[in-house]
Length: 143
Image (spheres, rainbow, N blue to C red):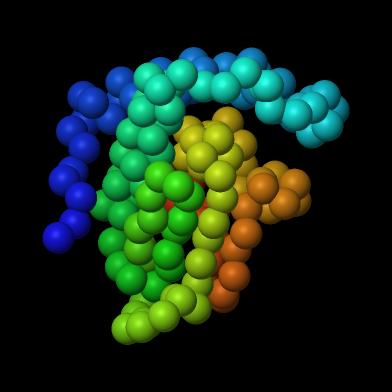
């Protein structure tokens, strides 16, 4: 049985909170400092982690709703994974088309703070398979 859908109200609120948490990093995107600086050294609170987890899952849910299918698996460990995009399906094991990234990068990609080519150039996204390109589907309309 799949996870329950996240309501638009809860999802939007979580995305707003998660974007606020990343605001200094998002504002610095594109600068030389942003590519060389490390993430904040303070540990996130449980509330921050819950907001980030909900935001990631909500944005994944929206992607799956926008481009349904089973050809590409999008993974954002440890928070979630979905399958999307129509085409050939797989039945067992690792799918032939996989996109994987961390939560902060996914949030930036999904909200438009980072483009797909920029994320690929930085090595922030692992994409394997001929169909593992999300550039046509990002950013996601979440508001």
